[in-house]
Length: 245
View 1 (cartoon, one colour):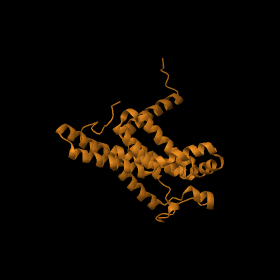
View 2 (tube, one colour):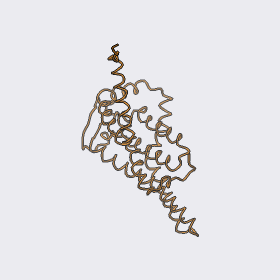
View 3 (cartoon, one colour):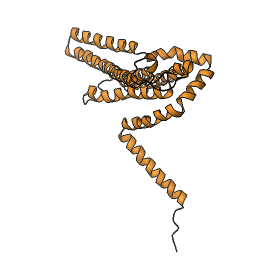
View 4 (spheres, one colour):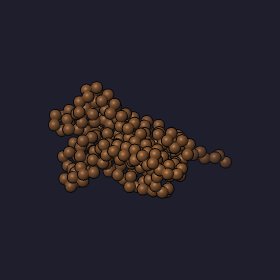
């Protein structure tokens, strides 16, 4: 009796499944590199075929109430408030550390200062990187598309209208919210929701293209993930301020 071989469609499906599993395993081993490579492919594709029509469609058809809601929450992506929060918290904890009586209290305040210093470092490093990339790439903002029909890039122009990519608000809010997830892990759903909404707001109020916000979000998250092991110094969870999950 001859043994029936697998049908070509079944063999192709098995091969595809095996390749998908290997790819997922590869991505898990490289949690920062894998999304970066995807974004390096997705962002140029979005710039070519999606960003412009999406921005025009939103500009024409966005609901006024929805626009107002997102315009209200988008200031959460401004860096000034987060720098003030983390800077004051870090400085305040250092002052308390110097004045505290007893070793346990001094160690506690020093640990708090270190945790808020981590937050500040994530904001500063990712923000500085975004500022440099914005000016080097020089992507024209959506308002120039709406007002003058201009869509493209003016590298190294240093003009305010050519600083669209990546989004600074998205970078700021993702650096802030991801760092807060490290400090206060029990409240991570609120932090994640805030980051998503603020990022979405930049697209809905048409001050950024979709690809701008995706890359900005990645840069903010990247800074936190890279800096966390260094600040924890081999002690996982050392940065946590709030209760664990």
